[in-house]
Image 1 (tube, helix red, strand yellow):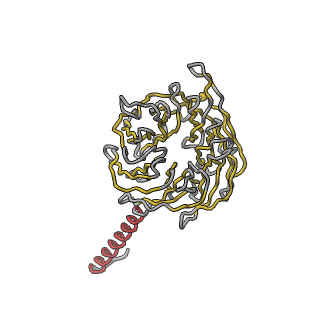
Image 2 (cartoon, rainbow, N blue to C red):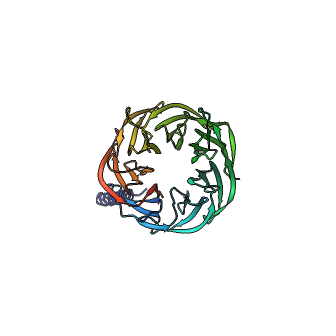
Image 3 (tube, rainbow, N blue to C red):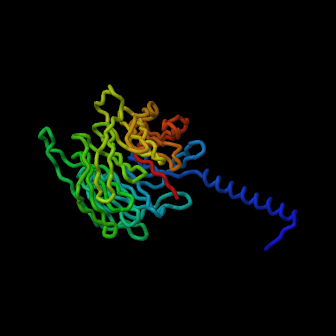
Length: 385
């Protein structure tokens, strides 16, 4: 057993305290590192592809956006689990997906290759948790496809495909499928496709090895007629999901059964206040706060972000307010930074991204005064190492 003199013991304690202080400072610096994010855009005179920027996690200030790579109408982005690659849809022509290598220093992107997405109007995509496949929703043709990924990040051939069918609506008119988003559960077992044309969230069994999609039983979660389910977000508990309905201007809460993939609608709540003239308005994105305490949805036309408190037991929603009004026009996508402190809200027709601090207790947005200008922003995707 080592023995120290009283003086040596004091010096040892001081030295240990200094090391602990240094460790704390290093850890604090790590927490305060700038947070990189990527911005997908539609092409315009002031936007030419995928941009990168950074968020100051202490103040909410944003760095001026820098063009990471030229691309055509890269409206939605997804990042590989390895953080080495980024994938983007292109809504032009017959639809395609681009694979990009991420420069780990600068954050710039390098095109690796492109592959057909499976149909016109490629509008949303995800990478599965194993990093083996990209899953894509193709809006105009109402289908979803799976593309294999190679070890070097390149897109390979299509391995899976499902086509939705037209239906006859309650008014006797034909309704064509419009696949608007695709998501996976936490264990890569089921895939969910929001179809705004036929008012269903289709459920598929996903084979993560083969990259195939097979209709599930039950085959879909159902929303109200003509609600037009658009985007989908999980609650952190993995047993509840929220779907934003484009035409109805509402959010639907689904209970989820992980064993069977079943989605059961239990609540639908408006994203705009009572009495609002809804003509010409629509919703776009839904985002659950990392804490699981709040969920938000974007209103286009009304040009606000609707906020809701999530009940800690039932996960049901209570409205807490309308935020961001007067700062953006046509908020399509928005996102919350990994810390949960800030919301980045983009205005597609106001050509800007505005930052709001989120009150951890109430969920309300508070103005920070920080924003950046960027043409036709369509997606904000955080890069988290």
